[in-house]
Length: 619
Image 1: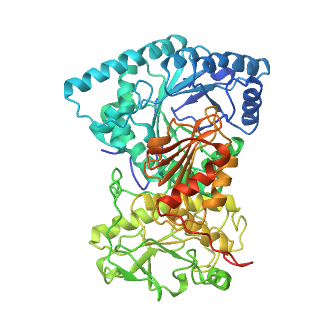
Image 2: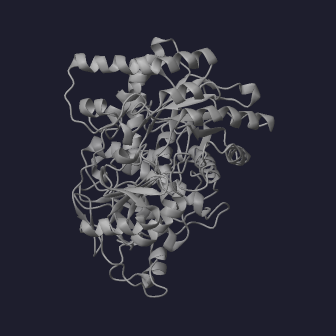
Image 3: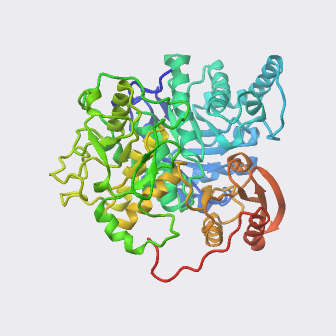
C-alpha cells in the first residue's frame, strides 16, 4: 500500500471535488486541485444567536472559510436556521458545518439549514460502554445493518438538499464494536469511517469528506496515511477529500507544535484538502496558525529536485524507531540505541544559556554542535561504503544541500539502508540560512555557525516554531532521529526550549506536565481557557504526568485513555474526575474541582510539591 507517490518528491494527492454550498455565493470546493481550505469552530452556546453570529463574523474577518457550530440537541440544530438567516441578512455567506455526535435526530434537523453536517461514526449510532464482547461475523453484519438504518436517512436527505457530510472519526470515541474487532488502532479508525462511507456510496452519495483526528500527532499521522492508502486500494473513485487536524492540541506553543507536527507532516506528503488547528484559545487565533502553516509548505517540500527512488525508508503505517547502536554524544550524554532523543545546540547558543542552567534543570544542552564527532553527508549523491567507516559514527545532512530537511534526511536514511549502515542521526530543522521565502538559499559560508544575517533572517519566532516542528516532528514520526538541532529560532533560550517542546509533542521525551486540552465549543460546560490556566498553575511542575482537560464527555474517556488524570465537564457547574478512562469522582462543584484534582493526583502517588524557584533562574 502507498499513501503518496514518493516520500521525497511533493505531489499533492488528487482528490475528487466536493462542493460545499454555492461557490458563486461564498461556498467552497474541496479537492480537485483547489487550495487547502481553512476552518475553525465557535466556542459559544448554539442557542445564543447573537454571539454565534458575532463569532462567525470575527472568524470570517481573519480569513476563515468554513465555520463549525455544535448542535448537541434538536433544539440547538433548529436554531441554526436563525443563525444562518442572520448571517445572510448581514451579507455573510460563509458555509456552516453542524457538529453532531450522539443524536441522529439533531443531524436530520441541522441538514435542513447548513451546508455541512459532521457525524462521528463512533457515537452517531452507538453508545460507548467500554464493553468487551466477541462479535461473530453474523453479529457484526447485524450491527452494520443497524448503523445503516440510523445513518441512511441523513445520507438521503443530504443528497436531496445538495449538502455535504463529514465522516469524522475520533481516536477517543471509537465504538465498542470497532474496539472489540480492531482495537484502539489506526486501522480501527479507518474501518469505522469506511463503514459509513459505504452507506453513502450505496445511496450514490459522494459529497463527503473524511477526518481521522487524535490528540497524539503520531497516531493521527498513521491514521491519515492508512486511510489514504486504503482509499487508493478501494478504487480510483474513492479519492474523497481529507480534513486534517490534531484534536485537543492544547494552547500556546504546545498546541501549535502538536498541530504543526501532525498537520504539517501530512501536508508535506501531499495529503489534506481542508485543515483546522484546534487550540484552547479564541478561535480567530486558529486561523492565523492555519494560514502561517500553509504558507510554509512550499518552503518545506521538494517539488524540483528529481529523485528516481520512490521507496519508503521507513514503515509509514506502523511507528517504529529506527534501530541504531548506542554511541557517546558528549561527555554527559549518549544517543542512539535505547537512549532518548538528545538535544544539541550550537556553541553560540550554549554560551548564552549555560550561565542560567541549574544542576537539576531538565531543559539543558546535551551536546555542542561544533564539538561533535560528526560526519556530514550529501544524500543527493550516491554514497559509498567507504564514505562511512562504521555504524557508530554519528551522521547528519551537510549544510547547503539543495533539499528541504524532510526530504534530505529521508534520503539519507535510504542511502544508509542501501549500504547496510545503522548510524545514529542528528536531525536539523534547517540546512541553510537565507531569504525567508526559500529554505534552499545558499548558506553564504556560514557552515556550523548561527543563522546568517541575510535578508529574511532571523525568522519570526512563530514561523521558526512552525518550520522546526514540521521538519523535526515529521522525521521523528517516521522513526528517524537520535538527536536534534534547532537553528531557525535565533533566540538561544527559545531555541533550546523549542527543541524540548518538539520532543515532548512528538512523544519522544517527557520533561514537563503534558496537557490534553480540547478547544471550547457550545457543548463545553466550563470556561476552558480559565480552567486550563488554573490547572496549569497548580500542576505544571509535575514532570511526566499527563492531564486531560475536557469541556464535555463527547471525546472524554477515550481521548483520555493514555492520560493519567482527567478533568471533565459533567454538568453545568459540575466536574467529573478520571483516572485514565475510569471516572472516579462525580459532580464536584467547579469551585473545588482543581484542588480535588490535586488531591486525586496525591492519592495516586504522583504529586510532588513545587520547588521554590530563585529569582532570575532557568532558561
